[in-house]
Image (cartoon, rainbow, N blue to C red; front, side, top):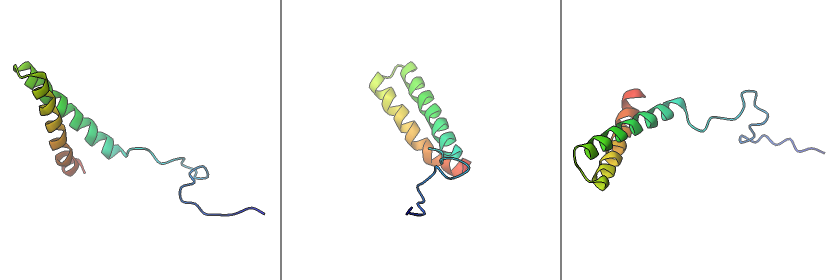
Length: 74
């Protein structure tokens, strides 16, 4: 006797395969925010700021860019 349980997490039987880990929208937002954070941190460091300050500026740029890009791109 086989159990015919309809499990929503069973992706082996779906014709399209498993769901992607990140949607294209999420990947684009995070990639663009990472670029903004790297540019912000890099410019802060090149302007003579300490390395710790550049890291904080980059993280702040990344964190501030995520919701803005989510609204703009979404």
